[in-house]
Image (cartoon, rainbow, N blue to C red; front, side, top):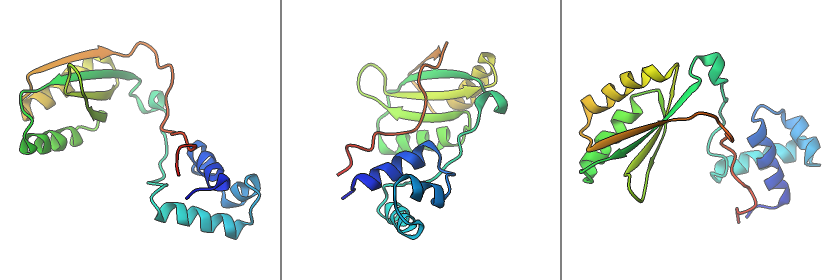
Length: 154
């Protein structure tokens, strides 16, 4: 069960995983050792799944985002595992979700420019059978981030 200090620790770590334990402890009014123990407990309990660095996409040369919506006629476990492996092997595909509704999957693809989508598309369709692929280009990013609300955690 999380208390208010745990939630604050999680909020600060989501904003900057590189924050020093000393600074974090000061912000949540704990000793450094108590704060460190709480972080360790949050990692062991799985509340903190991993710590990552978010790269600047412009500086990394992949400013373009394309969303590919996929329909498939296959839903067997074997096909799904093949699909997982294929999309896992393509680094430009940074997110993939199975959906309800008109499409089966949506892929978030980051690219150096929109013309590079064809390269990724060909890598995908050569390795796994798909019924339909429809793509949309993101014109503007209005909100981005991996932070999740901490208030719902029991």
